[in-house]
Length: 480
Image (cartoon, rainbow, N blue to C red; front, side, top):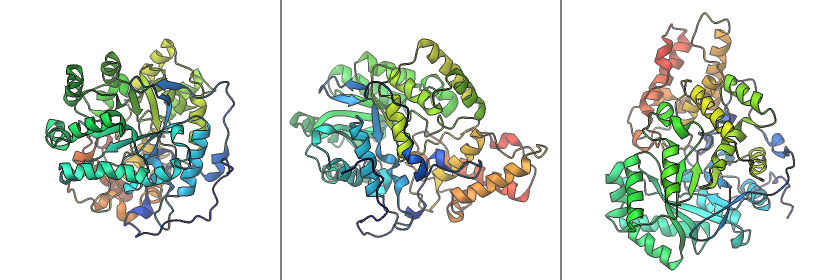
């Protein structure tokens, strides 16, 4: 097999019923169109090769099992970007191609969940990985019993066992309780404690079917502290934990997300206990790779040879208790760049850290909606492309191309670009105007966004633009 050859367009796929929303899969922030004349990343850019660096992939060691884990982890949530437009089926050959390249260049940690990619993630990832020897890769899986009807012991363990089947494995290297903290103590008790599921997982760890047991954390710091207190008491011990960490959330999560918890605290509490941290959202859903032009200029002035995104990846990797930094990489150009950043890692200096802190302070001044494109809110029962709507708004803010001042000489140019880009990014039947306000999406959001309110705000903004009505700019600044 020539692993660097681009997959053939003639692909044999499994036939199954086309889903309602599959044809309009969400794209990453970096590939939204309309507000900029730049086109989205295409296959032609996939073959860009980064500059050669001396040394290979940086690895970190898991204390409990001694695993040598690649500092760059593959977040498989983004496979949804590789769906065929006609069938809505993920391009398996392209996934295989990306996984082959990643493994050949030292990446060995792959993160999945039953709910990712409309339920296809584990199957697709399992097919790609099992073409390689089992000792070449570690799989991270989750128990995603996020809906209340899934909380029973029977339903939860059915999901757990199905992960083994879909991934085609006899053991799972890193198993997580998924989305802990979003629903407070009641949800934690309902999903894992009162039904005996956590006790079952501990027994599975003893048997070796789970090699490392942990949790992915979103939200309520009281739940985070509670789980660590259980660890300290020796009742339930954690081999690792997955947290959101980046140079904005490190000390400015409250300003950016209206949350009460900074990554500096989460990381520090784990490090005290020698519990390794796996990092999600190092780029804040792509926003730290697509920062406002003013911030980009500051970063480029300091290190012209570094990409904007690599600053964020180096920040996450510099912390020694970080086991692996996840990145969703549906395009080969992203995979190659991130491999270069960590092959090997050039840790940031304290001066660099201070510089990024001042950069983060500038970042939080911009009125972005804190959507990380995690898609936990999807599917919408009414077909709204929630991430697509919010990310298009963010992209225009980032580029400083928002048509909010009719006295601006570029107002009409920006107005046209926003409206055309909105229609290109989100089909009309899936735009914010079709939101019924049912609110089913709100409790699912790890960032605690009042999604209904934000959709209504974007829709009002769009209608004002179409009618060329006067409006108050402050109405369109982000708030919950």
